[in-house]
Each structure stands twice: as C-alpha cells, then as structure tokens.
Amino acid sequence: MRRLIAGLGGIALAASLSQFPEYAQQYTQRLGGAVDELRVITEDFDRAAQAGGMDRQAALARYAASSDSFLAGRGDSMALTFARYADLSETLARIQGAGPVERLRSLPAYIDTDIGRRTLEHYRPAVPVTMEGVLYAGAGFILGYLILSGLVRFCALPFRRRPQGRIYRA
Image (cartoon, rainbow, N blue to C red; front, top):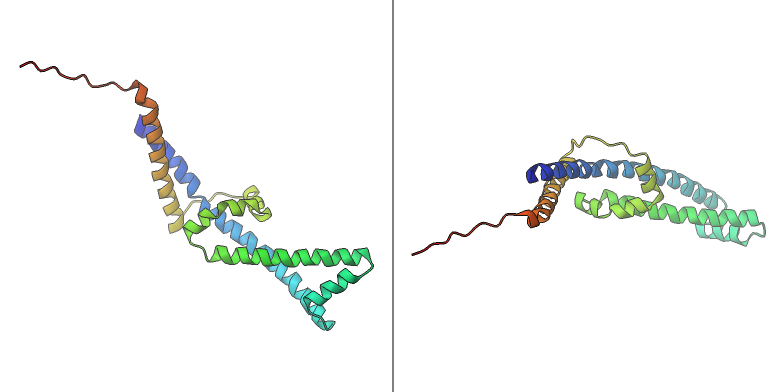
C-alpha cells in the first residue's frame, strides 16, 4: 500500500514539475514580446530626440520643464517606460543565459511580475518531450515518491507491530 501511495505521489509531482519548462518557455516568449515592443517605443523616442538635436535625457528634461501638465506627465510616463524596458531586457538576458536549475530557482521572481501572472493565467500544459522536461519529470517522480513514502511510513509508526523476542532457555 505504501508503494502504491508513494508511486501516485511520484507521478503527481512528476506531472507538475514536468510543466515548468513549458511555463518558462511561454513566459520567455511573452517577455521577449514585451521587450520588443518597448524597444520600438524607446528607439522611436531616441530618434525623435536626436532629430531635435537632443539625447534622451535632454528630451526628458524638456518634458519635465514644460509648464503644461500633460507634457510633463508624458515625460514622466516615458521615463517609466525606459526603466521598464531596461528591467525587462535585463530579466530576458538573465533567463536566456540561465540553465534549467537556475530557471527553477528563479520561479518566484517570474510569478511576481505582471508578465509572469499573465503567463500563469493563460498557461496551457504541454507534454514534456525535451530532455529538460523529462529530467524535471524524473526528478519530480523521485522526489514525490520519497516524500510520500516517508510520510506514509511515519504515519504508520504507531500501528507497527513490534517483533516478539524469542526466549531461549538453556
């Protein structure tokens, strides 16, 4: 019975962990799309600033110096856009350069972002056919089996029969 329960736990954790590479791939695609769009906006702003004889900082300072609250607000909005572009670009580079274990360790950081939450909302499970997916499934099975096996064994301790010692008389 213990092996059956532990096996089911192993299968459940294997199925769960095998989905991480697919989540990471879907997240990376969404992140790459966001970075690409922010790059277009950033490059367009920089070209417009350069055409006006300014760099990005000078153009932002010009927005900020405007007495028009709308223009000043647009300048603040653009500054936030540039900061988001830099942050997301850094995250994308970090993910693309990370190995399977490093990506798994970074999972909480993925989920905390807007993109990570939206990826989870629209996530579609996939059968793991990559070596990474198979390795996660195998690790999940072993871990799930060991955890549930140990838990069942621990819970059964009070009900275990103690071996009766034989009395030898000489």
